[in-house]
Each structure stands twice: as structure tokens, then as C-alpha cells.
Length: 370
Picture 1 (cartoon, rainbow, N blue to C red):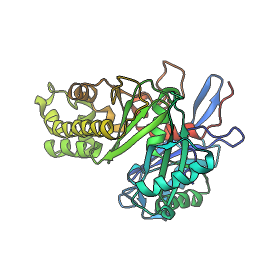
Picture 2: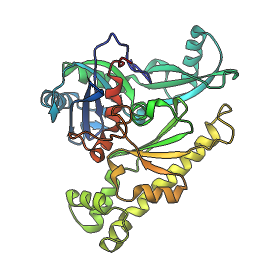
Picture 3: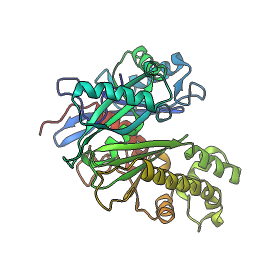
Picture 4: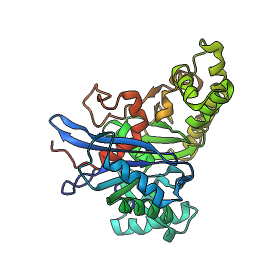
């Protein structure tokens, strides 16, 4: 039921739009084929009242359905022209990583993968949906095969499927957020060296390592935008709207507001840098394996995305703290022709918060004719 992991859908199937659901917000995007590739057909975003979705689990299905159904009927831009949906699954409830298996035929691989999932997730195999895909290996002489596996609890998946169907739509596939983020940011889904994607959302931050032709490792922490904005709000005794303006406009600039905004944010951003450093260290010692290129580093570059990545000065702070090049990612990398990074309806900075759903929308498109 998890559907596609890395590849676009088969050419005979209808297009689907992407739907990204989180605890507090939702976004959806439909792409279309244009004369020069892909273009934006429709998009929208909205909020959920607190308590409808908690830690990625839908608690009040009818209320979530009503909000989404209303939004689908009247997008902020364009019009949905398909009833097929590719929906996100919450990272905190999902298991996604690359495992190694001895080279074997497809039937043997199915049984081996099932055993690996049973050994590596804290749930019974009958309580999860899972999917997998072989990952190409550049060095043919290797005696093993890399396999990307993804699993999520049936209770979580069934909740999302039920809501989509009650809205009158057809779930095409459900994808873990990290897979969608990788599809959006990684040009042609290939890197020459490992890249760490840091997705800074409202309630949590996800760490995703992509190397070669596949996602390699994921994790998430509760250090996120809401916590930072809350710190600014408390420090200045202002409401959330004013705190957001200080967060995005001043951020980590020590020279403005006597450095008080910096002082409120810096301990949280320092903690984020420490979390990233620990994550890279863990990946280097536990997950990198022998067919990496000689002399390769654990992470050659960091790409930031998510709405909170617009924090002023974040790239510079993390780059100096981690001594790794840090850039803001381009969620249009596989949609628009270079060097374009935005469309008039969805400017670049705003689109960083749409990274996951743009990746989902890409999954929902048929392969373009070459």
C-alpha cells in the first residue's frame, strides 16, 4: 500500500496530485505537462485545529475530511483535474533505509527482505505495510545488493487512506516524507557524494542522507520552527504573528534589535547544529559501507528546506558550526528548467515549505516523453 518509492508512475496511469498532511497544516499541489516540461496546475494550503492529528496519527477523521474536502473544491490557485492522490506519511511513524543482501533472485529477495524488516522494526510484520526497491550499485563486482525498504504501521496508513476516500478521491500511493523530499531536491535523483537534506518544519526537523541513486538514512528530532518562533515570542512578549516577522526578517542577525532576536534563537539553532553533527557521526559509523568511493566523506553538502529554513542567517550559522557547505535547496530542481527556482504563483522562499508536496506531485506525474 505504500506505493512507489523512487520511480515515477507507469505511463498508462492517470496523473495524480500530491497531498502533504502534518499535525497542524496541509498542502496539495498538482503539476501538468507544458510545452517546456512541467508546470504548476493547482495548489493550496491550510491549517488543522490542534488535536485533529497528533504526532502524525489522525484522531478525528471526520473533521479532517471536512477541512480537506472543502480545500480540494476551491484551491488557492488553479483547479484539481484528477481524483488520484499521492499522499505523505509521517516520518516519525515510518522506517526507511537501505539494507544489504547477498545477490539473489527476486523470489529469494522477497523472503529475505521480509525477514530484515521483522528484525529491524519494533512492530510485528503483520502490523505494517512495507515496500522495497533494488538500488543500483555502480561497482558491479560487489557481492551484495542494496535494497531500499520502507514500512509504516497499518493503523496510520489506514487512517490516511480512509480520509482520502471519504473526500471522494483515490489514493494512488502513500510515501514517507523523506522519499518525497529527496525526489524534489536531488537533481535527477543522483549525487556524486553524500548530501544531507535538512527539512525544517513547524513541529519537527527531518534529517535525510541521499547518496548515489538512493536515500540512505533518515531520522527526525522535535527541534523545529514553532519552538524557535515561540522563543522569540516569549523573549519579546509579542504575539505569534509579530514573532514570525522577527524570526524571518531579523533571525540570526546580531546587529539588529541589539542582538536580542539572535539571543533568543541561538541556543535552539546551536542545539540543531549539535543534532546534525551527532546524526552525521552516527551515519558515518553505522551506515556507510564498503562500496562508497575511496576517500569519500560522510556528508559533502547540506541542503535546507521546509518553511523554517527561511530563518535569516541560518545557512551561515550552520556552515560555520559544522564546517560543511550549507545551501538552501531548490524544490523545483526536477520541475523547472535551470536556472528557474520559482513560478509567479508560488515564489521561491514560500515554495521551500512546499518541498515535500512538490516531491509527491512529481511522483503523481506520468513519465514525460523524451
